[in-house]
Image (tube, rainbow over all chains, first blue to last red):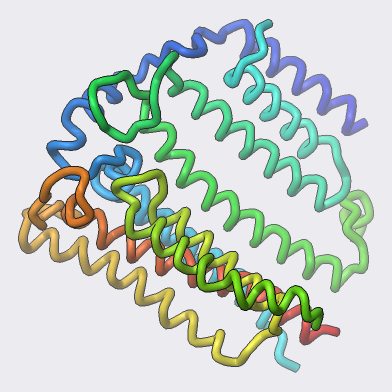
Length: 85
Length: 109
Length: 136
């Protein structure tokens, strides 16, 4: 029963997504990419643009991600060390 | 339908969604989550791809791929690892308490 | 897990693996890599050590290093308020692009993230492995 529902939902979603897909492979339309490539090196001083976005432009994402890592460690240690009998 | 990174990524996401809906074992549901995450990474990296584009490390005057999806997917990978670890640990505790990992049995408890 | 071949191979390879992880972290703004990737390599080194040599009591002190990574990260951000005007501003001199001492705060943030991710993954492995060992 669950399998049939799953197949129906996945097929409907697939048809909807593939019929409305307007992305072309190999022709990126990222508007911010030109700005990063032109000004990234002079604004941050780092050659590797991925790192310069990660640690300078979008550093709040990194902050939240470290918080997620911390909470995951907290949750794992609470679940596994909770029962001291 | 042409098989490239974008379509394969969407197909992987759909396969993972089917696994999460239809399967009855807790581990298989978690594996569905992992497959969804992998398809997401493939999809977003392919969206940022440019033909004849080099890796986004500036040297000289060539075309580069979009560096923003790479950054976001880097965050996604670590978040996926954290989520998977927590889910597997919870599955371990479920197995220790109820001695089963079957969803249809767990619903009756 | 007391195979002599595995122990010897780990003894020989471990310094190079740790060196490679540190290289990935420190050269994160010049070559492909960064804090996350190098941190995961160092965390895998810790997992290999756990598997081969067993779990030591000192691994509990990893959480102090993990908190230290997060605190360095936040401290750099708060220094950015004082010297640059907003949170996480890049207030150190940028330097010449392409050299090791370039990028301002990016290197410090990379090292903090690398420390945090490495110790965090080592802690995750340590907690789960210690639980499984204690249960048996």
